[in-house]
Amino acid sequence: MADRRTILVVDDDRPVRTLVARFLGKTYDIREAEDGEEAWAIIQSEDTAPDLVITDIRMPRTDGVTLLARIREEYPDIGVVMMSGTDTVSAAVRTMRLGAVDYVVKPFPSLDELAIIVERYFERQSVEHTLAEYVRLHREMTTHLKVRTFLCVDVVGSGRMKDGQDPFLVQFSFAEYHRYVQTTVESHNGAVHSTAGDGVMCLFPSAQDAVDAGIALYGALPDFNRETNRLAAPFTLRGGAHTGPVVIDEAGRVSEMFSAALDITGHLQKQAEPDRFEISHETWNAISNADCFAATGREVDGVDVYRYSPE
Image (cartoon, rainbow, N blue to C red; front, top):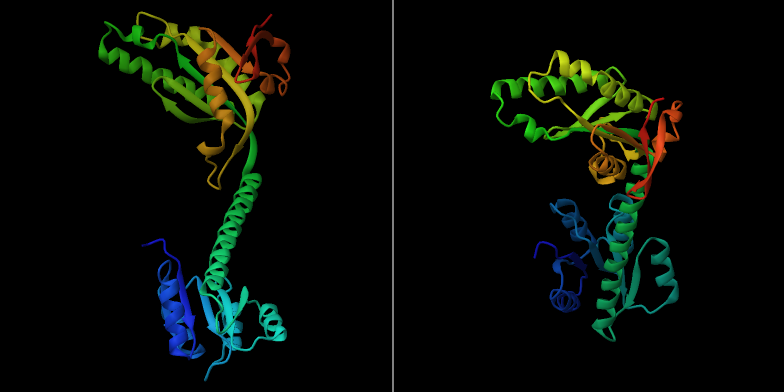
């Protein structure tokens, strides 16, 4: 199977090598070598290095201790279990200090003992890899974690606006609407993050920029309807803004996996009343014109909502 671990068994005693290979071969893919020199050649020549090496200590040409030292220096991700017919504490301590993951004495009282050593090593390795990936991901997230503000606007009743209208005028008016939103957003240091139907999600470096863009969109909408919209019905917006942490990659893109702020903004916009611009408490708390927004008494995803109400 493709996900089977590979073990290289190294021993100049063929019967011992064959016994270990057959026993562990039920669970793992096995390679064999008769001494450290052949084992080292296999490690360097194989397309995929073994996951674990089980080696005798005393062998001709290159012994197990020398092989262990080479592996630890050039292939530190490969684990090494030492075997020896010498039952001495000093031999075990020496090889463990050199980086062996465990030590087993020959002749084996039970091959189950070796199987347990191997199984525990792979379990420990799996946990360590998972932890390392978690640490890497956490470091990457905290490195690229930024506070940003999303602004989402959508056209209320866009389907009814298009019914019975000239398709060319519909296409023209909605294209101009999207241009109107993009131009307004960009003039307030923002950028269009994504679109879905007639909804537009925008990203801003600050809450103030997002709120100023939202106010500008609503404020100039009557002029847009009067001067640019070619449909019988006026454009009416439903919008929301929320500020929160997001993970941004090296290219400046927001990671969809770690963007609860984006989700909250979308829910805020969907639950806003027609012709209303509503913002979250996090956004309200970060702007200088907060007095232009009144508390609604509602929550969206546990976030207090404020509505634009200029005096």
